[in-house]
Structure formats: structure tokens, C-alpha cells
Image (cartoon, rainbow, N blue to C red; front, side, top):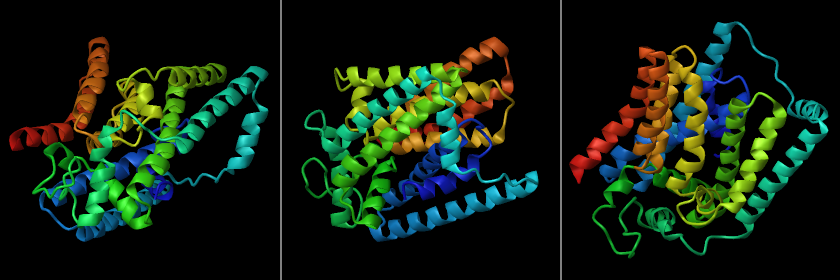
Length: 346
């Protein structure tokens, strides 16, 4: 569920990134899965459909999405009249290691060790403070499995509720976690605090690897950037408003995923898109990422408006390319609909 399905769904976006294509494919594939849950969960949650019905719809949706991605990728290969030879991962890795200079090897080892320590601490320890938002993640998923429907139980008190808090009902992350727990049998607390905590940590560093590749041409500078970034994370946990807290603390929560994965992914994608020819495929990818951001938290509305908006404004003043304004439509359309719906329903 965490590896194969996102990898297949990432087939929609192959070709957009040439460097670190496999990493880019996985990350965008995962965003596609989150976007699917966001799109399906909103109408079903407000219709108060049972969890059994929702699980069936999510399962069917994932199967159809994977099938569509597979067919699309195959047609794209046939159309290009080229089927690239499959590269074996281990020989490629061996060649990469052999090509490292002494300093690059030192930086790479340091980066792997620092991230390894962070992964170990994520597995070994758990949050004992600043963790009240679990009421809107673990408690909602656990309550849904018990009640047979999402948002029937107030996560704060455990009392019966006629409807969940409105801001939660617009986010698909709760349905995603609930579905994963129901399919695997792993309790929501374990799935979120252990499995997803480690997985999202690795995904975040995957985004930083992409970002390093975009910022620096020389490999030594990229590795040094990653080492310094990993060190800064270790030293920056001074409050629950810090990005370090989001990465090394409750990373399974929506705002944390938005801060440490979606945000750097936008920083990687948007400058590249603005400096290259307009593409409808890139436009659709931004729509998908906006849906994924909204699946995490309604705060994704601000992120999808401000981050691309600032970069687009600077680029437009510099180059006055009107067609790139369409990218802002892709980023803002879905957040605008959800935000307006939320305001009208309050």
C-alpha cells in the first residue's frame, strides 16, 4: 500500500523530471493517492455513508486509478516508440559509490548516519508532549473503525456526535488512515506513530534530495547541503511552531506533512515549471498536489495560494509570460472551491 500503489500511480507523471526520476515518480504518485482520497471522501463523509461502503469505493477507486496509470504509461511508451532498458539498481548504485570523491564519500556517510539516527529515534521514541492534535488523527480513525462511520464520535470526549467538526470533514487524510488500518489490521495509533512516521520522514528527505539537485549543479555541494539541512533539523526543535518539530515530532499529522513534504516539493517544482514551456501535464500535476494538500488540512489553502503565488508574481514581473498564470489556476482552483464551501457551511 505504501510502495507499490504510489509507484504505479506515479506513472502519470513520468517524463516531467529527468533527474532522480524514480524518486520523483514515487513522491508524485503518493500525492496522487492522497488526492484520490480527498476527492472521494468529501461527498461520502457528508452523505454519512457507512465505513463499509466507503472502503469499497476507496478500493475500487485505487484499482481504477492504478489501472489508468498503467495504461497511460504503456501508451506513452508506445507513442514515443522507445522502451528504455530496465536499469539494475545495484550496479547503478555501485557505479555511483565508485565515482564519489573522498569529500563526497564523507558527506554521504555523514548524511546517511544523521538520517539513520532520526529514523532510529522515530522508531524507538514517541511524542509525550505537544501531541494534542492526535485527537483529530488517531482518535478519529479509531472511532470510525469502532462506530462503522467516520465522525460519529467526538474525538475529544468520546461522546456520540451528529457530525464531525467541519474542518475535519473536508480533509481526506482521516479516511486514508482509516482505510489503511482496516485493510492491514494495524491499529491507527501504531500505523500513524510508527509506520507513517518513518515513511513520511524518508519521503521528506526524498523531497530535499530533489531540492538539492535543483539548487546545486555540483554533487559535492548537493551532499553538503543535505548534511547541513539534516544537522539543522537536529538542532531546531525549540517549539511546536518549528519545522523541526513537524519533521521529528508528529510528522503523521496533516500540518506536518504539509510543512515538510508538500512545501519543499512546491519549491522544487514551481521554479522549474515557470522557466520551461507551459505543459498541461504539469498543470494537472499542480491540481493533484493542491488536492493532496487539502486532504491534509484546510491550511493547505494558504500554502497553495501563497507559495506558488509569490513565485509566480516574481516570475511574471521578470518575464511577463501570461501563459504561466494558468499554473496558478491549477494551484488555486480546488482550494478555492473547498474554502468557499467551508465558509458557506459554517
